[in-house]
Amino acid sequence: MASQWYSLVSQKLFLASTLLDATTLTPKKGSALTAQTLQQEASTQGSIELLLRARQLLLVMIARLYQKRPEGPLSLADLSSMIGDQAPEIVSLTTLERESESWWNHLDQLETAQNRPPAARKTVSSENIIAVSAEAGPDRSVQSLRKTLEAIKQFTDNLEEQHGEW
Image (cartoon, rainbow, N blue to C red; front, side, top):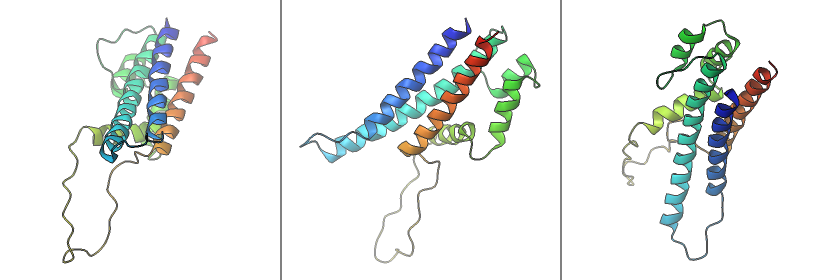
């Protein structure tokens, strides 16, 4: 039963990877820059949503590994209370949650940014140009998203391997 959830998580990660690949495709000749920009943004946001969904399904997968049937969406705290905070998966995920550079934390940052409207941009004129600042927020680059995707995939694969041996 757990392998069905593993397959579902893997499917979401594969689709996210496919969308990330689409952001780096060379645009067709004659295509409008606006259409290309929209396609890249849609691919980026789509891959983020699939990564977030994969993380949610990973929690369900872990609950199922412990023969629990969650009623709805799980948080890490819900899962911890369900299977116990000493379970190796909870210990690992709690550690990842605390690490600022972890894939779990990166997904938290992406989720927060994805759930907020974009910041209003100030208009630039010769009177108000003082310094250039980078846009605040999580790294949404293809490389960063791919790194997060590969880390969650590795975590999921290891989990399936460990529990598949039982």
